[in-house]
Length: 230
Image 1 (cartoon, helix red, strand yellow):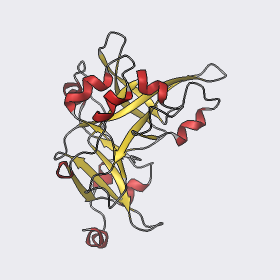
Image 2: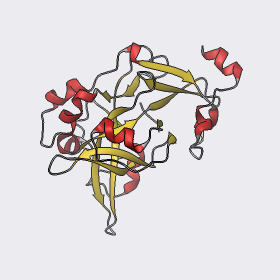
Image 3: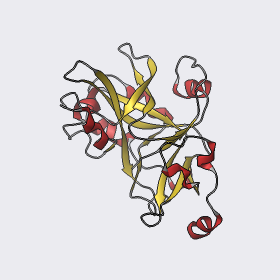
Image 4: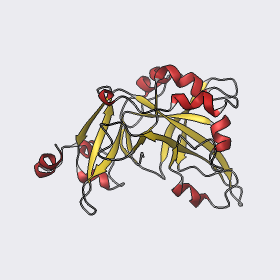
């Protein structure tokens, strides 16, 4: 799954990687959590890419209550085209979530140790996502998103059996293309990264608290935790 991630890269680097217009400086994020605003890349009606801030936790257009989004943070890529909550967005409202790392946890309940996972030596990458627009009974509008997951590779499997569906840069255009592409065309884009493309390191338990979002989240943990894990 993907329950927390990081996006520390500056705006110009994000703009270059995702072929966006130049972005102003952005605050680095070290502990992005569900229920918070997240940056997503999506295409407008003309096909041009835009960066938007959406609520992490998808609220389907038909939902009676926005609180349903708290349960729709991740979606399994293998079944996303069939589930009522995601099928419409999968066909025509796809997005990419920029990141430069994500977290998983290991250890017993009450003493969970966070592990930060990077891709290709800390490179910026894009997680496949979907977005939706919802209007509440009071007329309030909310745009929200969900991150797709796939089977974990062998490097991540000891921590969790799922991992984010990380897109190859050469598939960004296909994923964002407007129109109702069939699931069999998009499914091959959503596969685990090779083991050698990810690196893992234990980090500070500070990450366990959503109120903390600063560089100290990536500090090494106390030494006993390091010895236990690696």
